[in-house]
Amino acid sequence: MTPTSSSRNAAELPEPRESQEVRTIFWDLGGVLLTNGWDLHQRARVLSSLGVDLQAYEAVHDSANYFWERGLASAEDFFRETVIVSNPQLKITFAELWTLVCAESKVLHPECFDLLSALGASGRYRLATLNNESRELNAHRLDAFDLRRHFSYFLCSGYLHEMKPAPGFYRFAIEISGLPPSSSLFIDDKPENCVAARALGMQTILFQSPAQLTRELATLGIQTA
Image 1 (cartoon, rainbow, N blue to C red):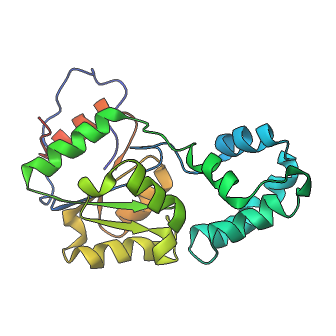
Image 2 (cartoon, rainbow, N blue to C red):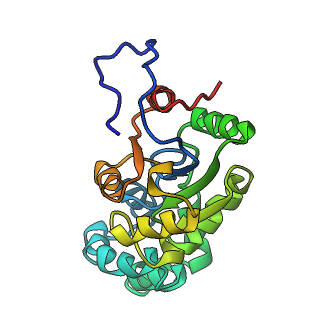
């Protein structure tokens, strides 16, 4: 589904769209509910504060991150390869660095947690996550933000060894839901991820803001109040 037009009055409630009834709602985490886990700005903040050469770090980040976010390397291996071994002057342990990394995760939109609570209380939907994230960051964020209270299950690249927008990632989600793809709704802040989900028959909302998300849910007949 396409996002609500920016020209639409924010107070206007759109008419419900005709579509198959939604049974499962898959949520991205970073950029929708929470900040990202370890993005370019977070890396710059943490590593520059330690005196790490950011250009040298970024030169190796992508190749190492390929394995980390797919659960094929541990967080300790990732940071030893990209930071600790190449910066012996830091005299920093992995545990110390990991604490700084985890501190970068914060709630991005409290209003989205209100939406989650309302959807869960309705009893009409199964709620799950569908996100690109390492095993360790995912585990930290589940605990730090009490996500198990909101979601029935968690589909994360670190466990599935695949990442959005690869089609296989969405096939996992559809098959695990046990329902037709058209009964699944996927909420994500990246256009390419929504395009890939739609190609497999899922309904999507391209997230822009909590207010826009509320309106888009209403167009699908999903009330949150």
